[in-house]
Each structure stands twice: as C-alpha cells, then as structure tokens.
Length: 274
Image (cartoon, rainbow, N blue to C red):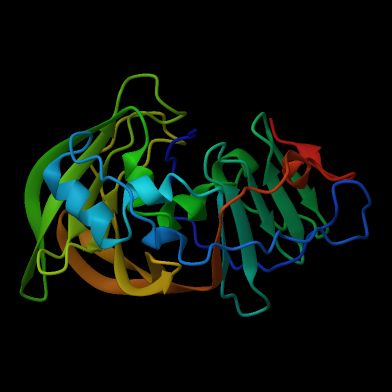
C-alpha cells in the first residue's frame, strides 16, 4: 500500500486550485464523504506487530489499525496568498496537490505537473508530491512496510526529555532507503512531539545530519489526533536551536473511501515528470 518517505527541508509558499483531468477549465471536486466516528470502531491493536513504545504512540493518535482502514486524507496548508490543498489515497499513495499556480499529481505510475505560472514549483515533482503528506501523516506513516525500529537517546528541549525511536528502512525500500528518522514522544501523553530526519534524495548518500520538526499542536478529526501546527527548528547536532518557521493545517478530513483513480490522472496540460 505504500510509497516511502523521501523528505527534506522544503518550505514553499503555495496556493489552492485544480483543473479537471478531462477539461482544462473545470475544477475537480474532492470527494466529501467523511467518516462518522469511524475511529471509534472497536478493533484489535496489533501490539505483536510493532514494538510496545511505538504502539503506544500509534494508540495515542487513534490506532494504526484504524488508520489502515481509512481510504484517504485531505488537508490544506495555510499560505499568505491562498491555501495548498493535498488529497492522498492512503493505500496506493496516489496524490493530488492543488494550488492557483499549478496542480501536481501522482497517479501511482508517475508524477505530473500542470503549471499555470512559469516555475511555480521550485522542487522536482517526484520529490514534492508526497513531501507534506509524510510530515502530516506522522506517526502513522512510520508503520509502513520495510521499517525497522530502534530505541535511541532521548531529546531534551526546554528542560523536558523526550524518548526516541529510530526508524530506518530495509535495503531497496523506496527511492531513498538510506533516509533515517527519529520519532520523539511525550512520555506523559505518548503523543508524538518531535521528528528528526536525514535527507538522501538529492545526494543519494547516507547522512548523519538531522533536521528537526516540532509537533506543537494537534486537532482531532473523527477520532484521529492529527497535526495542527508544525514548527521547523535550527539545530546543532541534537541540540535544538531557535525556531525557523511554522505551518498551520486546516480543513482536514479523513475519507472512508479513496477518490476514483481518475481523480489523480494527469490533466490535459500536465507534463510527466522525468
């Protein structure tokens, strides 16, 4: 069901709008079917599948078993000149990002870009199409296949200590299997608090330099505790410095059924990313 994390420090000011995959001037509507108390269904938690500590984190956010029953997630990132809207099918990881200046999609085979303004997207489409989804879908994307878990030294910030779980990937998994991530969680609530990550997408070489995101605020959507605000921080090794910037997420919904495949197909003016 998965494509795997390939993330880096990219913070673009984007906005929201889409052309229909069949006619260039018609907006494609995102399905509006949501789940009524879907996450409240009684399901067995697979505690034997994951280590106990990360299972506690999954449960604090609504349970990975319940998350895996969902079809799609939709969210918007607030931007000064208009929101950026992302729709992702959770099993196939097909994706659609809508802004006023471009539409970016991934149909399960290739990424494509439909720009209405020259150089509206400064990142490679294959890199950006799932970037913000993976930041947003934490901690649940850390339950993907091919992952190994390891307890690591805790992170200390403003006098509070956060236990760490290191996530790495089996060889050949995803486009950047050498990426590594560390989930730090609040031991009082078991909610995710920080994400440390390395980047290998561009260099294709293993890195020991971590970047850090603080998960500062949460919102509950149909029983799932999902991010409301993410903050990026400067760091010197594992010593956290000053805040660099923040992103707010609004208009979030979870869908029991993913959009039809046609929703993610290339628009008439779209160009396939190499």
